[in-house]
Length: 241
Length: 320
Image 1 (cartoon, one colour):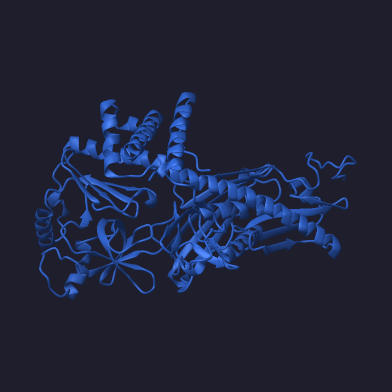
Image 2 (tube, chains in turn green, brown):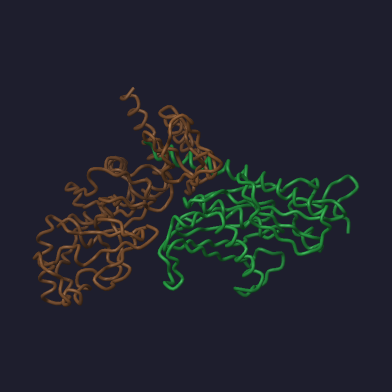
């Protein structure tokens, strides 16, 4: 199948190095300490953060740092064919783990000993790149909850199809079976916290693809910063002196 | 961006936007913008040494924020004041909490902090008012003082070495809160002030603005002493709780709901919740002859926002 046509356009009309449209909204869940909705094109994810709060299960309590928990789920209506997925299947457990590890890395857990932070992410619309969208949504929600972090983790995926590196794969490109590199970085510190790929790729092309994904992450980081800054400003001036 | 989630029609939307714009311009005139997000560098002059406070850390010799908020500078100290974070206790804060657990010689209270607060049996007045050692019998009768899910008011006594906090309720004004509503609002909207207990005799309502964002609106308790006596009787009669359940007059109930709704409106709009603003909001609703339920409608939200904009403009004029 042709994923990049001779004019250099992809199936959804993007250029190979073009990202989908981003949209972020903070404060979607009223009860949560922090929450956000993050959209990348047709992928839409909602995240809610509760905590830091008292540890629910005493035996899991850590005496010098906070316990971070994460739950990823996909809404039944999120995919093209509506099907009921059993909770805790392998895929969602794996993604929960990935998100947990990535977020735990950037949260300053040692500042909140003997407490727990719960992150719930749910995919509302799946169109490829849910993993990255979830991480971005979780970052926004954590920042909204006022949880101290080293940096804002952002994530983006990139692939390699028709011997062209493609940024931010959608569902059709994702299911083409080519390599799919998901990268998560700390943009200011310039460090990689997440790198996943389930295929083989020559090392020199891999470098290119990963570089592309990192560029994508940085673009997302800029956008997220803007949204957060606008949000804090608004809260502050509404509160008054 | 956090939107205000009320359904507005087109004119209301425009009016609300205008009011918020006005607030924004007032704010920007008053102080220069010092908002930061996570990992932003905070500019500091290199000459003088500085103290890094909450929400900051050091990276490559630069001070960076670890939170979203506003940079505050006090002499040498530089810190980031967060908005919308959980409650950060300080000694002496008056707070309202809910009992989640009755444990050995102590109650555990949920107070919107990262851990549950501890209220020791020994750091509160006994119902009989006598100072003495707490016996094993007292310990067994703890549930006659507070049970699970009771709402309790207290003061932050000190920090434990593990970061948890201890409360005390050693005075008549603290203790169990009955017959009223508990509201939870983001704690950044409650400012620390001289008075957090307000007895609104005009309305027959007690208002406690807990620093942790838990706000109690309840029936006016004339003097706590008589309650204490009642409690004494209570313990003697062993859990005949209905001792104090006199019918609350309808007017008081209405006032309670009105005040509670005023606070809800203010917290939805994200305005500071202080006594005077609450009273102004209630006055506004009374002059408009609005029903209690209508206070949560979109029109009233817009009116309150416009009123607040007006109030702050006049305040800055008076100052300048």
